[in-house]
Length: 98
Image (cartoon, rainbow, N blue to C red; front, side, top):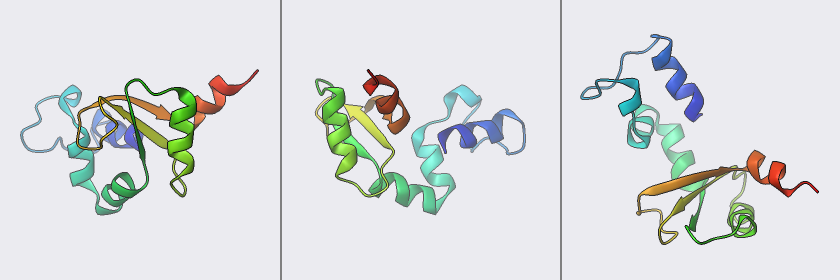
């Protein structure tokens, strides 16, 4: 979804939001403001872990939320903190292979 959001601006299909001069200035808030369904999905369908969490911690956070495919890393694991990283379900599967 994030990729699709950025791509539509990159291809010129959609005008950048007011106050955004360049595609590199887009924020997660711009994404949330663009679509109410996406906003609900991001508010209710993602997990959060603290910066010291392991990949196993991220997987446990993901498993607690139905249809969760993403976990965001913040300083304390609180959704109100700035996002420092992003872990997808695909990345967990890739790194979990032995």
